[in-house]
Amino acid sequence: MRKLLLLGMAVAALLSSCIPVDDLGAYWDKGVIDTLLVGKWQPDEHFKKQPNAESVVIAKNGNSYRIDDPDEKMRQRKGYMPTYARTLQAGDTLFFMVGPKQGDLIRYEIKEDKLEVYSLKAHAMRTFLKEKHPQAKNIEIDECAVCRSRARDDDSYDDVKIKTLDSETFAILSEIPKTDAYWTLDNRYKKAL
Image (cartoon, rainbow, N blue to C red; front, side, top):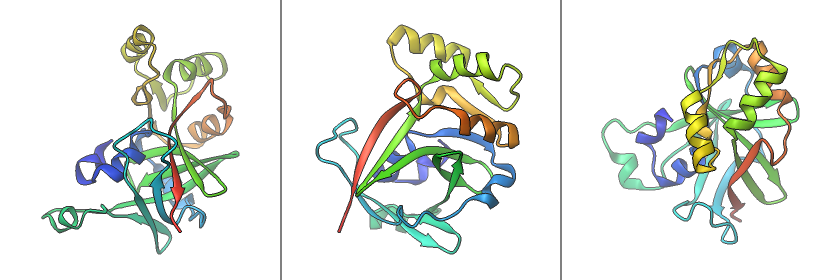
C-alpha cells in the first residue's frame, strides 16, 4: 500500500482492501473507465466496519480515474500527488487498479447506488493456489502471515501479493469465486446525489 502515505483517510479506507502488485505489466493499458464508479461516494451509515471511512471522489481524467484527497490542506502540501487508477475486468470480477507501473488491485462491485469494496482472504487463496495453480510464479502468499491469520482468526488481505500481473496471474484472478469463502466485504459506500 505504497500510496497511502500520500492520501487522506478517505482514500486510505478504499485502498485498505488492496492486493499489492509489484509490476502491473501490460495490464495497465488494458484498464478502462467504469462510468458507474465516477462520482462522489460517502460511507454507508449502515455499514460501520471501518468507522473512520470518509467520502471518496473518483473523477475521470482522460483514460484513467484521478482520486484527490478531499482535504484541501493535504492537496496543498509539497510533494502531494493524486492517485491514478483504472478498472480491470478479470472474468466477471472488477478490480480498481491503482498504477500505472507498480500498484494495487481492489475488488469492487456496484449494486444500484452502493459501492462495495472487498479484500481477499489469504488462507482461502493459499488453498486455491495449492489445489488449482501449484506452479503459479507471480502470485504468492506470505506463509508466516497465513499462520498469524489462523491464530487470530483474521484473513489479512496484505498476505496475498502479486509480483507481476501477467496472463497466468490474470487468469487466476478471473477464476477466484466471488463468494464469502474467498472475499471479505470491507467497506460499503453510497453514491452522493
